[in-house]
Structures are given as C-alpha cells and as structure tokens.
Image (cartoon, rainbow, N blue to C red):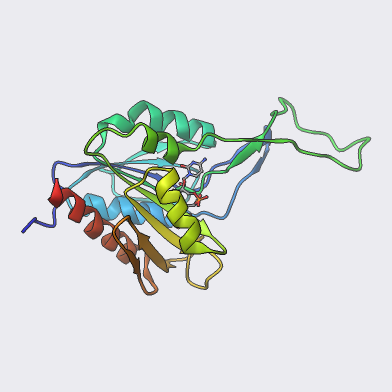
Length: 221
Ligand code: PMT
C-alpha cells in the first residue's frame, strides 16, 4: 500500500482573489478569502510536502515554512505561475482569478467631474490553469476548482476536459456553507473515472480529501 505521505513532493497552490485595477486606488475583485487555498497549503505541509502559495490579497497567517508569493492581479499571478510551475509535482488552482480586467488602467485617479456615466471596457485575462494544463510536464498532477451557480456538474466536467486537469473540485457557490468566505465547503470531486459528492465539511477536511485523491494518482505512477 502507498503511504499517506507527501514527503519529497513539491506542491504549488494558487489562492485568494485577484484585483484588477481601474486606477491607482480602485479595483474589481471578488469575495474569495483564501481560506480554501491556505487549508490546502497547510494540509500539504502537514503531509511533508514543500509548499508554495501564489496568493492574491488575503488576511491569513500560516506556517513560516510555507512559502507565500504575493500578487495582486491575474496577470501577475499568471506570470509567477509560468515562471515556476515546472518545478512542482502537484499543482492546485483554488484562486478566484478575475476572468476580465479593465482594458486600460488610468495612471491617475479617475475624476467624476463632468460625467454622469462611466463605462469600463474589459478584456479577457489569461487562463492560468489552462496554460499549465496545456503545457503540463509528464507526471505532474493538476487539480482545478470550479465555482458555479448552475449546471455545476456539466460545467465542471467541461473544465476537466478543456483545461486538461486530472481532478476538478466543483463547488456550488450559492449553497449555504459552500464557496466564498466561509469556513466550510460542499464539493464534488470530478475526475475522468468518477464523480464523488462530499457532504458539508470544514475546508481543512476538504483539503484532506483532495490530497487523499491526489495520492491515488501518485500511487499509480
Ligand atoms: O477563498 P475562499 O473564500 O476560501 O473561497 C474558495 C473558492 C470559492 C474561491 C474556491 O473554492 C473556488 O471555487 N476557487 C475557484 C474559483 C474560480 O475562479 O473558479 P472558475 O470556475 O471561474 O475557474 C475554474 C478554474 O480555473 C479554477 O481552478 C481557477 O483558479 C482557474 N482559473 C480561472 C480563470 C483564470 N483566468 N485562470 C485560472 O487559473
């Protein structure tokens, strides 16, 4: 039997929200607290892995031995991941990355004088998970998340395919006790082989279940 142990493994996790700036003081973001991502980091660390978190702005303190790389925008997160992802064995994408960013960022504070309406043009951000999925090194295990409000399973199965992930952790972010900024989550683990519905549990327990699943892949290698 394979031991429940990540000793010698390198784990990279994206966590938290991104901020997409309009001007020096304003940004578009979302409600991600980073709790899910940091729970994953701590679980991997406890199992003996060397852990790096590429983190959007959050208010979480964690173990000193977990390396935290702070970023703000999706673009910064993308470039950081691109720079280092090749060095890792297990990659987990729990960050709530903004799909769009303002087309231009004003150098100075946008003024309200002389205008009653203001339109913001948005352009698409790079898909970090898809980039890694498409450029994955043999042996790397890739876990994506899926935040949905409808057709959760179908949409998440689609992400498993299009983003070339080994596992998708789907959460219906409208359910009470699931998703953004709470201590619990209700997830479905979706792989090519099976769909496993988990009951509501703490984000630490969800993290345990995710790594239990990842270990079944490691054991097969
Ligand atoms: O941080 P918490 O408050 O604890 O909340 C946890 C969470 C709800 C943020 C988390 O459980 C979660 O669902 N994270 C994924 C959020 C998300 O952006 O999902 P998505 O379905 O839009 O994206 C699918 C996957 O692609 C995700 O793994 C995402 O990280 C990744 N992605 C998306 C867009 C993009 N440009 N780059 C990406 O890497």
